[in-house]
Image (cartoon, rainbow, N blue to C red; front, side, top):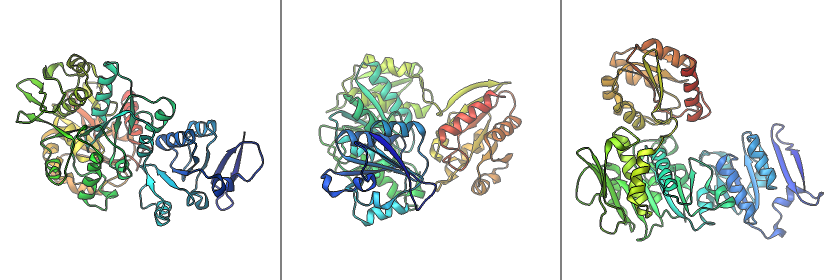
Length: 485
C-alpha cells in the first residue's frame, strides 16, 4: 500500500489523501466506482466522532471517505492513514461526496451548511456517529441528555460502573468516540452523553436506560429560534425504547412534565426530585439522599447522608440521584453505588475549584455554556462574586439569572467579541462592569475587582467559539492565568 496526496485543482488549500493497495490506478474514481458493489460511506468532519466512524466503517468492509472543510489534526490523519482510509481537508469535493449511499455527519456541522443542503437535495441519508456505531454492538446503552448536568451525570454513572467492576466504555460528547470503541474493543456497557445535535440524526438507535436531566433554552440558534424544535430533539432519546427499558428524569422540570403527556412512553418511568412524593424513585428527606425501589424498578432501596456525597450543591443532588438510579437499573449493588457516590472526583471545567490567591477563591465553570448552567453556579456561591461571562450568544435570555446576579455578584466582567447584549441585560443593575477580549485581561480585571474573601467565577453562559477553540480551551486558559497570578 502507498499513499497519494493530491491537490484539488479547484482549491489550492485543499488536500486529498487516497491510500490504496497495489499501486497505480485512479484512486479518485475508485472511490465512487459502481463496480465495487460495496456500500459507500462518507464522513463529514474528521474530529473524534468522524474518525471513529471511519475506522468502524472500514472495519465493517464499507467503502469509506472522510471530508473536512478545515484542517485535520495530525493524530487523526495518522489514524486514518493507519487504517487505509481516504480523506481530504480544507474542502468538500462534491464528486466524492454526492455519490455516497449514506453520510455520517459531525454534530458540529449545521444542516444549513451548503454541502449538507446538497446531500439532502440528493436524497442521501444523513446519520450520526452514535447511530452508526449502534448498529454494530449489542452492548447495554445508558444514554444521558439534558440542557445541564449531563456531563457530570455521565461521568458519575461511568465512575459507578467502573467501581463496580463492569466492562464499560465512556462515549458521546465525552471520552473516546463510541464508534472507535466498538471497532477496536467493544464493551458490555456504554455510558453515552448525547447532545441535541447528535440526537437530530439518530433514528434506529435504542437507549436501554435513557436519562434526561432537564430542558431549558439552549442552542436556539441551531433550531430556528424555536424552543419546541430543541425540545423535540431532546425527546428523540426515547425513540425505540421498549417496556424492558427505563426512562430516568427530573420530575419537577416543567418542560419534561408537559412533554410526557404528549408521548406514549413504553419504558418504565423512574422519576426523581428534591421533595418526597408518590412514585419517585429518588428524593431528598432531611439530610438524606433516598433511593426507593419503585414498582417495576430494580433500583435498590437505601439512604445516604448528603454530607457523604463527593459532589456538593443542589444541582449535584439531581446528578447523584440520576446516576444512582441508572446504576441500580443496571443491577449494581447499593453498597457499590454508595461508595462510588462518595469517591467521585468531579469533572474538569464544571465548578472546578482552583484554590485561593491572596484570599480570593477562583472557580472554573467554563462548561457553563448556557444561562441555566450559570444559574446553578451562582446559586452555589456563598461569597461576594466577580462573575466572568460572555462569548458566542446562542439566543440567550439572561432574565433568568438577573435576580441571582443582583444577590450574589459584586462585579461583572464581559469576555467576548460582542458584548452589547450583556450590557443591555446587566448594566442597569448598577454594579461595576468591564469589557475584555482575552482570558489574561479577564483574570487580571476580575482580580482587581475582588478582595480577600471574594470569589472569581468563570461561568460564561455562552459558547466559546468567538475567542477560544472550545470550552475546554477557555477553561484551561483560565486555569493557566490563575496559576500565573
